[in-house]
Image (tube, rainbow, N blue to C red; front, side):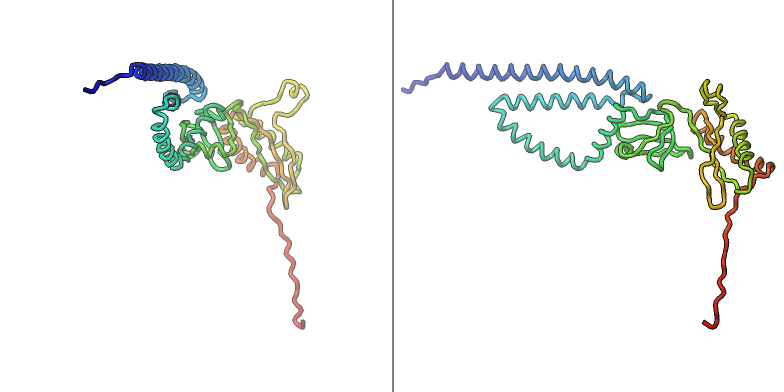
Length: 295
């Protein structure tokens, strides 16, 4: 007759390890939940403030807060698998397969992630906001209509929407005409002939710009006392057949400055003609060399 023996010490030791592993897993999970909620709260407050400045919907950044929770929970699961020896081998196998899968997905969506990261940088550093008049590089210019974490929508002056990926914006020079002071100094350049009265042309140009309703007086009180003119006109260069003048006129914003510049050019055509100021025409001297037939 065979008597079965039972080792109570081994059973108790096994149960003690199981309870210990369960406690460790519960503690790690609890800490992960607390940390995720704290990070979500911090990000919520920050993104709400940034969205108020950028004048965009703060709910568009909700997925970022969820992504932070996902990362925290994944780290917690990894730590649990690493702590429990029985799960370590299984975890290594699972994470190795997941790593290959993640590498494939990451390579395929590299550009999308780059746009997201660039969008986050736009939210953090705020180079422009919705409603700002900006110029991206040397091509695209208009008013910002929307800022997402993938792209930015610009409404140009032809009322066409330009959708630019955030990675493109991050690599370009941005000219923002609205971020601090909307006032802009407009350069109005015109050429006159060498025979024209220079002082009279400068006076007409200055008066024409100053009389425009969009022209602002940007002089300081001290400059007004010193008699600095509201619109300064300078000779900037000599062309092949012209003396080139430039007037410095201030406007409230880029749009009003563009209108002022166009109106001034139109007015100058008549005023220069009435004042005897000649617009230059190209002059060419052609020399004909007589060919020697004998040679």
